[in-house]
Length: 365
Length: 264
Image (cartoon, rainbow over all chains, first blue to last red; front, top):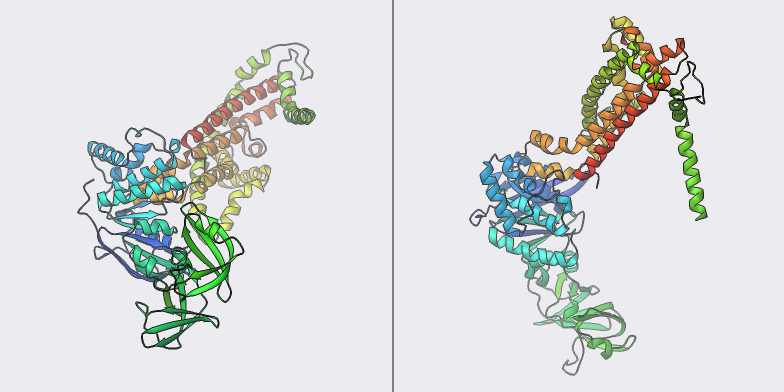
């Protein structure tokens, strides 16, 4: 599959889709670069699948344009768009065997039979499915069906590979394995890929960039690390990973020192956040991830220490998630390595937590 | 144990009740005497010989077969188009069309037959095969349309989307994906329609003449004049024929499983 130099760019320009009186996608603009693995991430009903269907041509946008390599494809019917789609249900043709499924797109392109055979065999080989040509699709496992659906989509050398939650029907172990294989496949083929998922783990591990969507609108477009460490708003902060949302706090600024008054009893020291110019007296939302909170020990010097009662321990093997009820803040979650916290801070006991704001996300309220 | 016994007793009673008329007719058909009587007082196959050689029955069977084949095929074409229209398109009057399609279930067969008799007189079509076929198409159409309608509803729309995505034009999607997937439904509907047409009596009574009578009508005419068990023998033969057709249909359902179309 020599597709390394065949990446194509996709531009989505001010695209809006309205069904009856519901706006599914609202003024979405995205530039997907050649060979990029772009993920559309969001809860169900956020418009990500509608957007993908518009790229494939199954839906027509109400307004706006979709371009492949700069050329508007809005009027191109689905069968001439040269996109390769993998459906959540795989949609393998039940009346055809594995070979005929994969060969379908090549036959529609009227390739000579010999060439079709060679291409299908190469695709089967790439997907580690050699020898399965004659099988009926219903006889295959979910993982095998998934690979056939992928083989069927890439064998036509599409301009864009469209993946609609292709991993969500698989069980957990298989899903992780397929994530690795998808990544390898992308590296091997260099295909521009649009991947739709509601699973933030998949989005973070697979993507070059992630588009977070909510209610038909784009919330943030970022590389995975930036998405996790610098979420653009409260929705992204709470949708990606776990995060503690502290009550609205008042910023007290004096020179280079910042204090955030979370409640009359609790004020936390912080610094100027990266992308926000704070004014004295301004209200802010503070988000802090469980792994950045620690149980206070001798090495903590007394600043940013809050006290609360241990409400629950959730042991997860590699780490323990602990819930602490902090008066004035509410439930605070922290994550500590191993099981040490369970002995160190028994249920119901009062403990002190260190809440540094160095890596906290501070957004204007 | 006790409950299981009771269950099987009830099931047997129901089965017996449902098949008793057929059992009585079949037993009577072996009666050696000239009179229709039950229970039979011997065993003979003479009425089968008569049934198979009697010219009226032979002619009527041939007519009925032609009518059944043509009318169920026409119904298949019309019913499939209707089913596509109703499943795939939204248009004003869609509900009305669905209503009309199912109306032969509401309109009694004799009304349909009587209507076509009057219409046939007006169009100068009476005593022709055309008017019988027209009548039978109306009678069997809902069954064909229903069968295709259900198979169409069972197709995952993503099969067709996927085919289009892989480069299949609308015509190719239809011929390579949609039609192959509904063929079991079409064939099943066609078989049911053939059986219904072959055994239809009340509407046929109006629109057939002695030259164009179908088998049930010929049987009715025979029994009005003779009292021997030939009609019972014809009935038994019809039951066997229908059973063979149904076994074919069942084989067909087996085919559905192979195609794995019924698994979602």
